Image 1 (tube, rainbow, N blue to C red):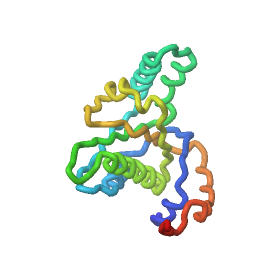
Image 2 (image 1 turned 30 degrees about the vertical axis):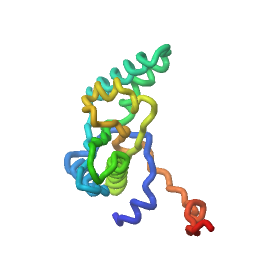
Image 3 (image 1 turned 90 degrees about the horizontal axis):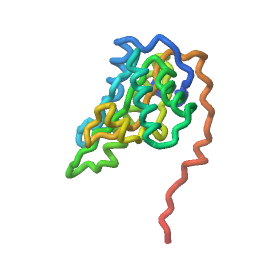
Image 4 (image 1 turned 120 degrees about the vertical axis):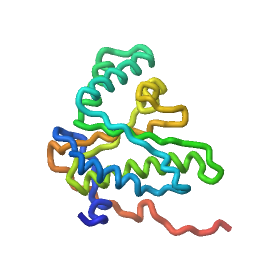
Length: 187
C-alpha cells in the first residue's frame, strides 16, 4: 500500500472481531511506532498488549475504577467490564515522560501519541481494523496502577485492534481551506 493511501484513507474501525493480528503483523505495527518523531531519541513510549482472558481482567479493573468514582450504576459497571471485549486485541499506549534538559514533557507525550498513530496507519495498511479509544477511565490513577504504570508514565489511550466486522467506511474528503491559512504578521 502506498503511504499516501494510508494517510488519506485511514478511518477508525470500531466493530472488530477475531482474529487479532498475527505475530508478523504485530511486528510491523510496533516497527511503525518506532518511526514516530522522537526528539532526543528518548523513545518516550511503551505498549502493553491485552488479549484473551486478560481482556476480562482489564474489564474487572475498569469496573473497579468506576466503583471508586462513586455511585456507579449496574449499567455503568457492566459497560466498563465489557469495554475490553470489543476487540480481540487491545494495545495500551503509554507515554514515559521524563525530565530532560532539551525535550519538554509535553513533546514526549506528543511523540507517544505519534507512535500510536503510526500503529493505526500500519494497521490500516495491512487491512487490520483499529480504533483509538480514551475516555474518563484512561486517566484513572487506579487503572494506571492496575496496569503497572510507573510514576513517570501516563496512559495515552487504548488501541482496539482486530478484523473488521464490516468493510471500513470511506474516509470523507475534507477541504483543507477550512483549517489552513497563511500567517500574516500583526501590525
